[in-house]
Image (cartoon, rainbow, N blue to C red; front, side, top):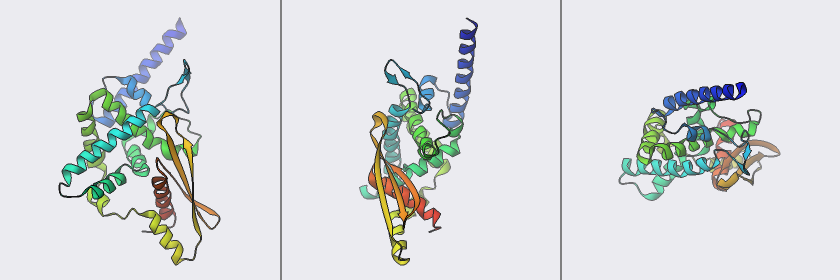
Length: 240
C-alpha cells in the first residue's frame, strides 16, 4: 500500500514538472498531459504493454506532417508571388533534421526527453524527433490553429531568420563534390536504411573522403540524408 502511494505521488510530481516544462516551451497549459508524456518517451526507454511498445513514434509521424503543413501555410502567405519550387525548397530547409535539432535545444527539450542517454548516435536525431512528436501532441491537444500558432510564434519567429534561410546555399552535396574536385580528393556517399518503428524507414548517409569517414546524416529520404551528411561535412571542412 505504501509503495503504491509513493509511486502515485512520484507520478504526480513528474506530471507537474512536465506541465511546467510544456507551459514554458509552448506558452500554454496542456489539457491532456498524457499526450506530452508520450511525446517525450523514446522507444529506448519504453516498456512493452499488452504486446505494444509505447513510444513517441506515432506522435512523431503525425507531428512531422502537421509541422510541414504549418510551415507551408506560413510560407504560402508570406510569399504570395513565389512559385511552388521556391516554397518547397524553403520549407525543406526549415524542417530538416539539423534545424529541428537546433530548435529543440533552444526550447529546452533535452531536459524532458526520456531516452537512452548512452546511445551517442541516437542523440543526433532524437531531439528533432521529439520536437515533431510534441507538435503532434499539441495538434491533438489543442487543434490545428493553436498548433500553427506554436510553430510560427515559438519556432519560426524567435529562432529563424527567414531571409537568411531563403538566401542560404543549402546544396551541400554539390559543395562537397566541387571541393573534392578542386582538391583531387576521392569522395563517396554510403546510404543505408534503418527501420523506424511504425513510422517507416529512416535513411542514414555516411560520407567518406578517401577512407576517412566524415559527416553522418539522417533523413526520411536518401536525398535528405545525403544533404544532412554533406552539411555536417561542410562544417568539418570549414567550407562557407
